[in-house]
Amino acid sequence: MAELSKTTDEMDWISEGFQFNREHVPCADGGLTALDWVHSRDEERLHDGSPICLFVHSITATTNDHYALVPFLKHGKREGWRMACHVRRGHGGMRLQTPNFCTVGNTDDLHNAVLTVAERYPNAPIFLVGLSAGTNSVIRYAGELEHPRFKRADTAQNVAGVVAIGAGFELPTAWDNCESPYDRIILSKVKSFFVAENHDILEDFNSEQCRRAMESKSLNEFNKAAALLCGFDSYAEFNDRINTMAVATYIRVPLLILNANDDPLCVSANITNNVQETFRSNEKSILVVTPFGGHLGWFEGWNGMRWHARAATEFVQAVVAGRCVTA
Image (cartoon, rainbow, N blue to C red; front, side):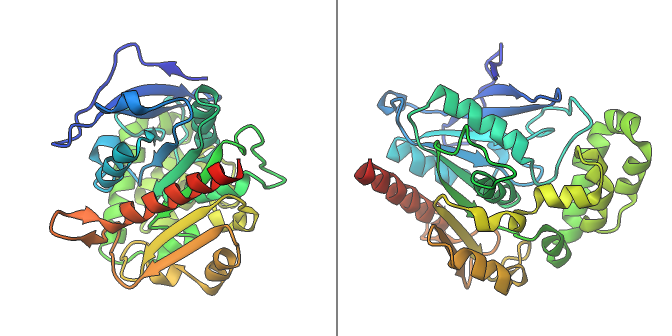
């Protein structure tokens, strides 16, 4: 399923001392994603059943430049969790191998990564932690685990819980509601990162859609043009396979969602009555919306630590403890 890189690519995490060992994970269509495994001095504490936190990064980000990841790594190291980051297609220095990308991730690729982890550590509970755009694929995946159309029987018993930090929920609505100037900044980044950086392979595949994507004036316009560059035959199919709310009622695993009312990217208007009812009526789901926190902010104290990492840690602890009681 996955092959370990011949040359170990260990990346120093700024001043915190974390290192990452990259494992490339080939996809069925010839694409390539990766797992960046966290290394620390306390690895001897880990065993085959140690909880695993698999992080899913935000849009155009990767493991060692994600500003919200360090607090989670600190908590996970202290708790004795095995940790890794799923690096999506075209991210983390990996050029696209096929004309197929997705701004918010693809659950088939995520499933491939989860299956790789589960096959290596079959006795370990796996927790998916999505950050910003990464929330889309982890919430969607949680719904697909038990959905009759997308059921992921080979990993349903391994995924113990899901955490989503800064979720957008209904994608077309979320893109339209993104506040200025962030909408223009993100649009410029996705054009450059996904299309311009992979122009040759995408141009050869569909030059017209490449042109439309680069000329788009809004994030939704970009996604409409790019849908055919994301492995889908139409924008309707893209929305059907990407939208989290389409499968949210099928979520049966413990799920924690943290959002802030003053988030300028994933704005409070995205948390519609339908969204609130869907998650708050599910006994397995917790939807927390704080008055303040910005986008993946939630700073507390004088040391710059982020509250959401502590909240997510307590959630994982509770789920692990519950599994031990019922085992």
